[in-house]
Length: 309
Ligand code: PSU
Ligand code: MN
Image 1 (cartoon, protein in one colour):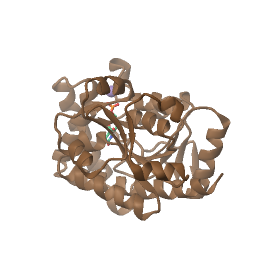
Image 2 (spheres, rainbow, N blue to C red):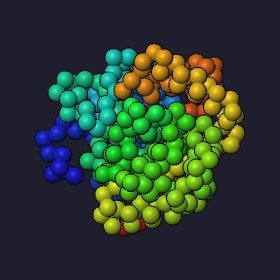
Image 3 (spheres, rainbow, N blue to C red):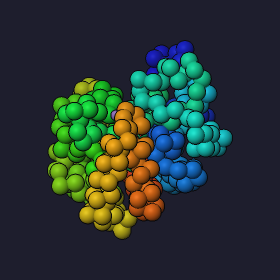
Image 4 (cartoon, rainbow, N blue to C red):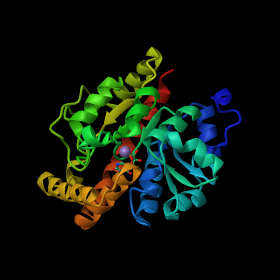
């Protein structure tokens, strides 16, 4: 990674650099969920708690963001606060990173940008809430998240709670298959729908333990396919929302987005904000719970991965 990264404005936090050098477990965390996915100050509290959970499970957290044009792998308290509180922060997918650096901007990194930077730094395991995917109506709008393309070409394992039904989940799973991304259900063969434990779609594969998942990550990388892996970890039952309730609210939010002509990178943040308001905060609570659950699993996977050569 040192060669590939030479000359880049890449800053790896000391604790993360030390862990990587010693092959200790490290978990990457994204920051668009902080800058654009949740309101302040809940976003900052969530980001701090998730880092603590990764620590508590024996791994080092590396929250990734662009701060004043620097690609930061691991944020200190000031940088984490900046990305949570700066309402001017950009939303950077992988295509945007170079421009963010030239413009010396603050930017939350999406799943795609976080994967790219994690891979550069040598981090194999990444925890998030939900990935971007194929939007409903994509046959008209062509709105397909760059997350799916990055998953097809960057060898990082992404632990998520599936994809929410603001997306077209069957089409999202089709693109993941085309992109050669194994979709692994954790303890289930049902692909989870973020707020609920099942989308009604099946995963290709099921694994039940962190050790099995770590072994699969190692072998998948050794095969050299170059693609990532999607680890689909359902929201805990106690935190999940009522499927009929959330489906109605998502339908309302989608109708409002269409009516207001929301397009491009604004779509996902708009829908998340509307859903949070329409559920009177219940969606935010569930979102935070599932991110914590994913962080704990990702740390366990990273710990098991570090035990393998
Ligand atoms: N889904 C969520 N919360 C989020 C996102 C998705 O429930 O914060 C963010 C992630 O950073 C994801 C990005 O990578 O949105 C996808 O954006 P788009 O759909 O514009 O590709
Ligand atoms: Mn999009």
